Length: 326
Image 1 (spheres, helix red, strand yellow):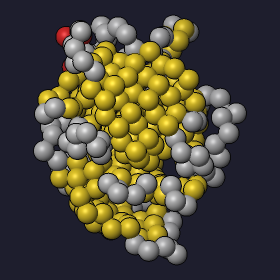
Image 2 (image 1 turned 60 degrees about the horizontal axis):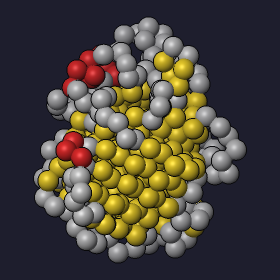
Image 3 (image 1 turned 45 degrees about the horizontal axis):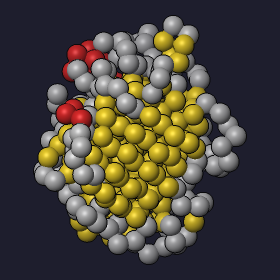
């Protein structure tokens, strides 16, 4: 499936949202960037675009957060997205948001990850959120300038590029991404775990994604998969148990350093909303059991994890950025 913006094909009467985003993290320091280009379209209205920029620095505490809305929304030739003077497309992202300006390039030798399995789920109304990672593991170069600080220069920073769209966010979700593991520098984890509402009931947790280690990609979760467990998911982190083919099991333990989480509010096209907690410099430990009765493999990334938690409640204790969604 070629990566392309989906919003131009949305009927006027339909509601939808869409996001192209990237994350990159320093291999040496707890410094990371998370940049999103988004589309918000309520039913019967024109689609509107926004640019979001979050800069994490564990040495300074609270992240820099800003959002700019109202720029001209365009689907770029080749299918990606531009909002005003900011754009993201195959191989590069450049733009500005508040006091931040960036010019980045990225490259990946890993093919796209299509999280949903089987593939026909991309053609059905449910799940209402579709997601892919055009580059589940990428290398970033360039510079991000932030007023009052030294320029952040990226030289081979590991990260990823993601794309999601749909008519409604999940009722509750966790997104985990991990790079910069000391035991296997090429390894990565990219998995979404969610609960959705169907016929008025909230489903159990379901996972979809993949892990790459020891030179091979292994799919995790899927419609028929069993064994997904979520423990203590909150603003401080979580533990997630995941299952794959052939008896593969993965346990991911995520820890958010104090005061480093960003808080955003995401709007659904119908006017509902979620609070979203994101930390892109989280500590991540993986315990991977390749198959039944095989010895476990342990991998640790001190600050290369990304942890996103989407919730309905407002009492999580993370300050929400003062920028309305929608």
